[in-house]
Amino acid sequence: MRTTGEHGERPDDSPESAGATRRARCVLSRPLPGRGARATRGRAGVPDPVGSSLVSTRAAQEFRHGDVVCAVRGLTKTYPAVRGRRGVPATPEIRATDDVGLDIRRGEIFGLLGPNGAGKSTLVRQLTGLMRPDRGSVGILGHDIVRHPERASRILAYLGQESTALDELTVSLAAETTGRLRGLDARRARAERDDVLDELGLAPLAGRPLRKLSGGQRRLACLAAALVGERPLLVLDEPTTGMDPVARRAVWSAVDRRRAEHGATVLLVTHNVIEAETVLDRVAVLDRGRVIACDTPSGLKERVAGEVRVDLVWREAAPLHVPEVAALCDRVVESGRRWTLRLAPEEARTVVATVTGGAAFAALDDFTLATPSLEDVYLALGGAVRQGLVKA
Ligand SMILES: Nc1ncnc2c1ncn2[C@@H]1O[C@H](COP(=O)(O)OP(=O)(O)OP(=O)(O)O)[C@@H](O)[C@H]1O
Ligand SMILES: [Mg+2]
Image 1 (tube, helix red, strand yellow):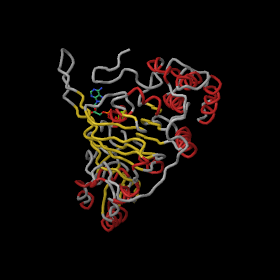
Image 2 (cartoon, rainbow, N blue to C red):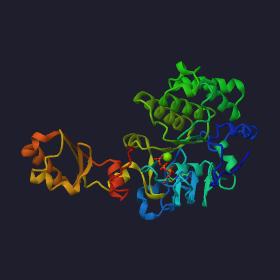
Image 3 (tube, rainbow, N blue to C red):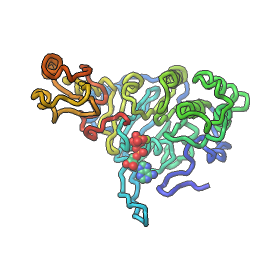
């Protein structure tokens, strides 16, 4: 079995992949460090590894070294340039993660937010031992994952952004096999399989092969497999992509239950800003490989507390013949018929009065005034302008 791929990447895409079979023999059966423990908050004045200008005082105060499950320092990964060949264009070198520093504390749900290509998946693949960083360190529950990547599968469950390794198995077998690979005996693996399939509403699909399921169903089945054979750290790369609202709710409550009942720590990559705001304890915002902010969702939002978001939805096109509307042109983020503006409260009132009272009103379909979201924070932080966090 190869241990490293073209870019230092290990070929087995997830701990559950076929490549994991050989490692199964050394899966730990002893209790894992950190199980059953809950997050504790406290002691002030301990330095945070993320640049102090990026961390609010409150977050720094809550930080305790003893509570850190995953410590990342200076993590850097550059995908090498590829020379062009006949019919294949050259690609430049890409610095996908750039000196990333993070501390993820026991029992928290920690989010990674950022636009497409920000480096989120590259970062989590380095944390899970599937990709070797160019430099930097990853310590998870005291294990040096850069030096001992094979230990990662014993201490964390990973749901990759694209998981195909289980496609040939039925939902039931995928969950059971993962449990066995993680050291459960046959009876326990079957019991955990049944519990997790019930919990996620997958029992009716248990006998179906994953490749014959819809995208959202397959994603849910992969998550079910990741949850069997409890691990103290769950690393989930966009777990709810393609899921309907019922399935999404089942995922969040399953994740939350593992945190509440077993003290599991969760690292979550997500584009869903609304969910992120309700589920996450802390968020790191990634932009072009760098952590540009790290705080609680409300701590981040305080940075743009003086702003209000105004959304204007036009029936067809914006009435640019109205001078007050034309004057807004260079301040809007336009998305189809929707105009979004970030304004001081007084300005927002003026804009709403203008579009609801004057000549522009006939062209207006809908409008909303809202307090800032994480999306606004990202834009205010100077992230890729106009791109935003939400996947197109
Ligand atoms: N195997 C690879 N070879 C070369 N470049 C890569 C490779 N994988 C990713 N990249 C590049 O590295 C950067 C970061 O990619 P990554 O997949 O980590 O982003 P992401 O934040 O997960 O994006 P998304 O939200 O779309 O999943 C992007 O510019 C991407 O094009
Ligand atoms: Mg990704």
